[in-house]
Each structure stands twice: as C-alpha cells, then as structure tokens.
Length: 168
Figure (spheres, rainbow, N blue to C red):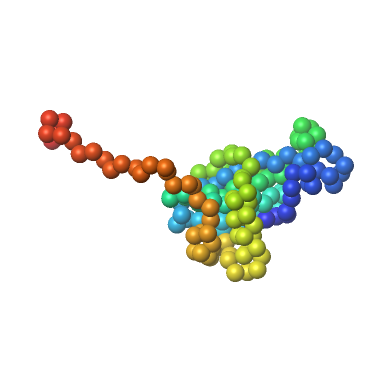
C-alpha cells in the first residue's frame, strides 16, 4: 500500500534542497467497508504510479476506521514553483477526494505514534502476503488504536413526561 517509504527530512535531501512537503489525507470508511476502501486506494495508486505516498496512520473508533495517507508533494521550493512532482501529487489528492468520496476523505494533521505503528504493522502484513487489501485480517482491526472511551457514560434518552406528549 506504500508507493515508497519516506520521511519529511529524507525525501527532500535527494537533490540537496530544503525539506519535503507532505500532505495528509484521512479516509474514514465504515468498519465493514475497510477492505473496499483499501482496494480502491490501491487501484487509485496504480493509476498514479509517479506519486510518492504511504499509509502513514491507522486507527479506529466505534463506527469508522481512519486510514491516513501521506502524499509527498516534493521539496518546498519545487512546490512553490508548482513542479511536475507537485502537480502529480495534487492530481492524486484530487482523485482521492473525487473517487473515494464514499470514504469521507478529509485533510488531517500528521498521525501520532500509535497510528504510525498500526500503519507499519499493516504494511508489514501486506508485504508478507498475510493481509491483502481485499482480505484485511480481523485481528489487525482489533489491534488498532481506538478513540479513548469517554470519562462519563453516555446517558440513555429521557422518555417524555405525560404533559410533553404530542398526540399523533
């Protein structure tokens, strides 16, 4: 699922230019649609083979799995000049928003350590052939970091009192 592994400091050093700019887009498929989302992302990546990107974060909550994709726009000076690498990366990000809109894409901040570790585990499983984009292991989803449970329980809805009922 990773086109190339990169870090913000290493990707820009190849030409001796300033640091590389990475934009993070988060896809939020419902838990049952995670495999479909990853398969669609892989298909989209095959169409944009010149773009450097990686799955940089993976987490979940009660309803959705958050898949964070880091797209390398290139060195900061080249992005300012709208280089061909930046144009290709922008086209890829645009395609994410247009073709994967069912998975609620949003721009997001750089993922945290737990999300990065989960993404690394996913990529290791994919590289080993144990988990494909169309057959993501259920135990991997269970091992994802989730949102912390609320400090207070969610109250149940209050039933209307006798004077609050509206006749049908």
